[in-house]
Amino acid sequence: METRKAPAGRRPAPRRWATALWAAYAQTVAFGSGAVTAFLAADAAAEFHAPSGTRLWPLGAFAIGFTLTASAIPRTGPLGRARAAGGIGAGALALLALAAALAPGFAFAVAACGLLGVASGAVVAVSGRVLAAAEVGDGSASVGLSAAALLAGIAAGVLSLAALPLYGWRGVFGLLVVAAVLAAWKFAEHVPNDT
Image (tube, rainbow, N blue to C red; front, side, top):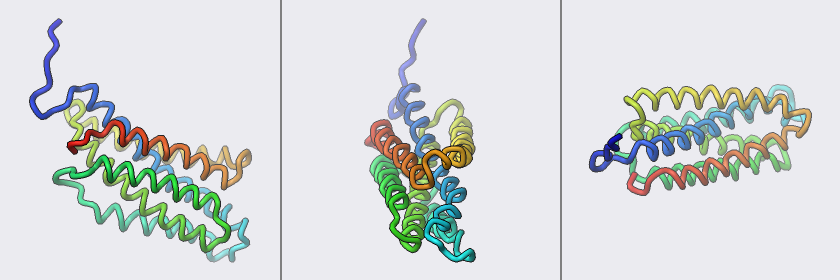
């Protein structure tokens, strides 16, 4: 069996798939952070005895930060420093999830969730560009991976409800920290320097 070499300027297929899969994982963690925030915002607010009208403020802050950041990052054109931007974004996501988990008060939790939304929006946008540039399969696999990342992130949020009785809302955000650290590490490892 003859092995074909990758065309000049294009990475071998296994490397492209590794890049695409870890970019999709980073997207999963970012989408999952939104789902976790959505499902646990009321529990966090209840612990801080926040008034009932403000219980969803952490989710609102997350949504505003996510939307502003994801909208501000272009979806086309050269990738530029995707490796650095995605790795730093996922690292910031981990630190901000830790800040949310250790929040001493409700206002701090709202601010941490807002900044978590900013980091998540950046990770989703940069990872999406990396997925599109990876050229896996006939090109449609990138879209499929991104859609699967969204569904997996929502599923992670649902699973956070199952973990809530065991770990509490702070512990669930701690699990998000672990997932985000892995995303930052593997994103930086597998996204090539030249992108």
